Amino acid sequence: MLSYLFENFDERAKIVAKLEDKANLFEQYIANRCAPNPSYVVSTQQRCASYFGIHNDEAVLQFFSKGQLKWIAQLQQENVAEEQAAKALFLQIFREARHKLEQSELSAVAHQLQLVMPQLTDHMLNATWQHFLEGTYGVCTKDGLPDTVAKKQVLVTLIDSFIARNASVRLDGIPRSYLSQLVDALDGVEPQFAPHERQRSSRQRCINEVRLNYLS
Image 1: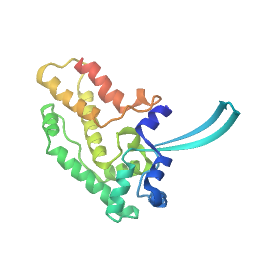
Image 2: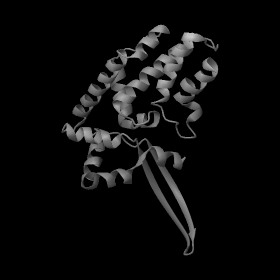
Image 3: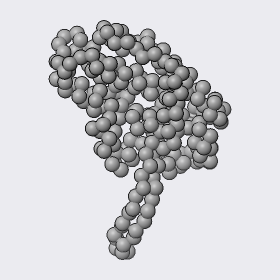
Image 4: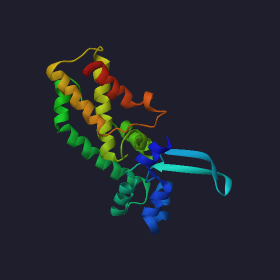
């Protein structure tokens, strides 16, 4: 698990080192609910044996999404320091990404499969912001950034809708190609997930199982 986290996330010490003299600002953004909490917190007990003998130690590691530094840079660029402004910035980027998706080929593909693009509601937007702050989207997207979150949400909703309406049958020809495009697009924004999460993840349900049940 640790190898997965170190490879796909930034541990707090790495972020602090990159921010240098702005490390306190990083802590302030989290405290003020402008930036996400860590996506994973790992408590470890370490036992080290070497020429100098046995050493026991404990550590708490905090892992943030790869997009955390980029988000902090965006907050700085926009002079954002409080939650209301941070939420407005997040939702602006999120809505712009949704609009691009609605105008993209993926929207046309969904239409061909008789799938409807999910509607934006205040409840959904508020819930998305809360999940963002909790670090949830660091777990279930590759970078945790608002445009990636928008794409992941739409694709998972579309694929779940397809599954709910169709029996486990193989697809041929054009329908198969359309579904494959949706699955491949989701594959591009979803992580592998930590080993203990994989069987319960949206990747397992919407990518692995769909490829097995409909596209193999």
